[in-house]
Image (cartoon, rainbow, N blue to C red; front, top):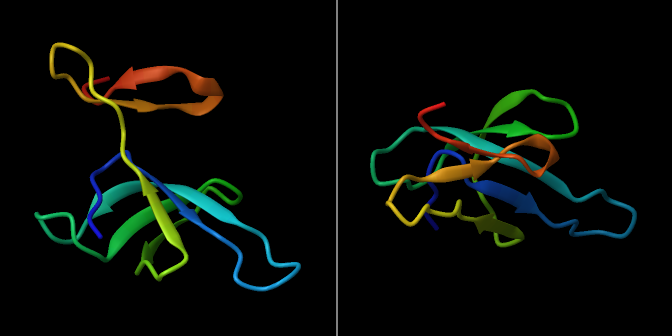
Length: 83
């Protein structure tokens, strides 16, 4: 599993009553995007090193037609990574 900065990470609950977590990849430890990644968790705003497990999904950011990558910001607003 690989990720890029700006990708959304979703960790599904593995037991009843456990909350699903989601966050944004804010830093990579390896240039090829392999784990671990630094993730900013949406529920706390804290950043932690994350090693994905089998319950993890990665949603990759979209690309503009001109090839400029974008990532969805809060409130659904799109920002270029250059912003």
